[in-house]
Length: 254
Length: 310
Image 1 (tube, rainbow over the protein chains, first blue to last red):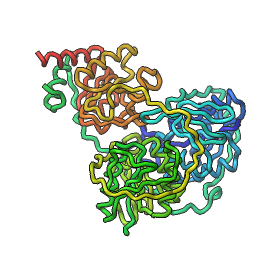
Image 2 (image 1 turned 180 degrees about the horizontal axis):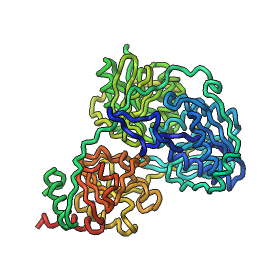
Image 3 (image 1 turned 30 degrees about the vertical axis):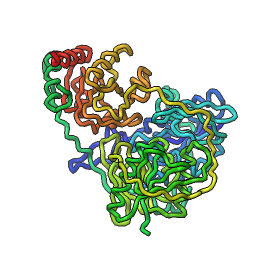
Image 4 (image 1 turned 180 degrees about the vertical axis):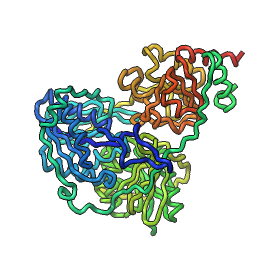
């Protein structure tokens, strides 16, 4: 079976700095493979193990995002494609449109894996948009995936679990609980550079982006107004002081 | 007629929050709101006026079916904005609508406004570190953060019906079952005691459950407890990929405070953190911090609470 996996090079939210004017410094922010994309890739690799076939990875990003693609290849993907565009200037609709075009160009694929959302902005829009562009069935938020002649999956919703079935090819997004992603070995990391990576410019792949897209107007640090009171003392003393504070706040009834 | 603001959610309680968001936007722009229902009008859904879409025959309104039905109606009636509750299914509905209607899509709005010819949403980004203002030209689609708006009550206006014709689905539902979950809905809990990696054994969660019971609260957890260790069902997982809560009091016990977790509880009124590591990031997100061993501190809190009754 042929599997496609969509990955994103995301800003590493834990390393993101806020400058003195209260704005996040995005241009020079450290980046990483979006955390949950590793679960999508892991799931594809596991199904390749049982079904045979290949795993191709697709990424929309700036040329620097090749390092994320390489990480995916080190984890075990067979080939990659990078669609170069400025990630700060394109919205999820354009990203999905580009991924759809790239997957069509490099396909056909039996199943396209995505994570349910990226670790940086977590809109979760790209996977269903991608499926809609491709005209394929979409199974979102899967926590269990079975492949036979069809796709059978358990969808994890807020209050319920749905068991659904769809024909192949399909697009699926997985929740992060589905698996534990592997770490590449040193040999795999070295071999990753030998695997084929295709590069295509976004505007060559799909010309004339329309103007209906979303754009960021401003960003500012989330203000926090926590008290940061550290309560000292033995466990008994600290507990008594805490309970007294919580009573004062009216949070626990007398 | 002024172009209207539509609202929709697959969840009844969220539908009322979205209707409230729609009303705020309509008041600001001098337009009217329409609550969209599919197949049948559900009891408990409030709105100023309703648009009931008939045609999809299946009782199961999958996000695929909902998006196609709403898209057909929107092509006829041309709403200015379609707001969808950002449930897992709602995200799919909105994303599909954006592609079908060829309009831009905002997501997880906690505040909506109009700036010139743009719909503008405030949303949390980078695991809650940043508030982003994102704009998109009209007409537009946006998802509204669950719990972001006070639910609309009453105002049940008239219902217009529109037959959008049969809608096919590429995905077949074989089975649907309720998730197993605790007796308390964490999103409604006033007090939450939340367990993290500092808890060494599954049985030890009992210590925290006892504290939660003593305080009349509910037990939550960070991702490792539910996802990696499986000690609690996923429904207890508070964080970016789990649920978002904003109780009056949040006690983070043995939780290091990764951004992914803080994203799910940062809007709590008062946060208490208990951790052995004085440098744990959770203390940055806390009002009160105790550096100490939860196995000593939690029983001490229980005792302190109990002694007040004497």
